[in-house]
Image (cartoon, rainbow, N blue to C red; front, top):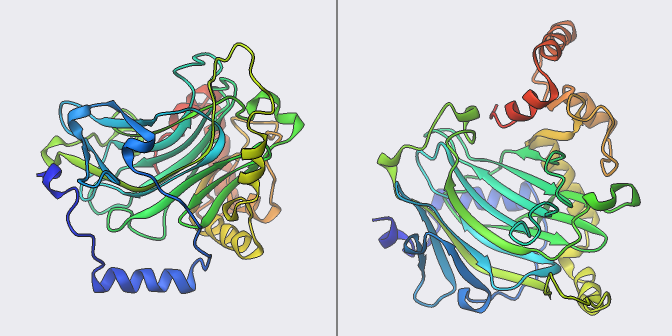
Length: 352
């Protein structure tokens, strides 16, 4: 049934239209990007679970399914030295606990010990509770220095398509939801190799992450609701294709494309977009590694600390949801005694 439902008519209900109208005019007013999309065969190949990867008749949309036998995924045909990677995505609905839908760039298959990665990871939930998601950044194999932030959304991502995008340039990285920048990482000398610098492929996957994705593994994938279907359309790959293992790489080979990327509308955070990003982070971000003093007693060099934002987070990087200052202090001290830093890294995968 999931395969048959992949490409049914995508019309807005009156209620969803009103929600869209409200959010567009009152939540985050930003201009649409000028993008060139491509078909699946023009830019991608199946990665795994071929039988669970279903393409639309025109080749411009694809469904990824997860069932009791396998998940599925696809990968870009080329690796890119910087780029803009984007798709409109609709996530599975109803009971989705234990499921992860990922849209990310990586070079882990080529540089196993020194890989780079930029992630969107969408975390399913039990029925009636919302999807959450996280962004993350790894550079040069710094897998012990994950730079994750976690958020909720101002819409239901299983009802309509929304655009998720990653911009990666020599200067900065920007994560977008629709045309709203939700996170920016500026490159600086102190980051060194922690700033992603090697060619990466674009990946999209759906898989069973029952061990950690929902409430730290408390809620598992329930295959009575399978198949779980995630849909992708309006795919975008803007970047400089690059062979990652050239014997004599040309350091200027992507100069023209880099300059072109940095001049695109999505590379500029206008004052309106800056305001929208600030509003999003104030309302919807509930964990930031930059405020996590247990994992990072010394603030990572790329973090720009907002004094007002700092007051909203505990020293675990999680939102302070209230209670007396004295009570919060007691809880924090108790946590410090109970947890080592390594134990907290594992616990950080628990949803609030």
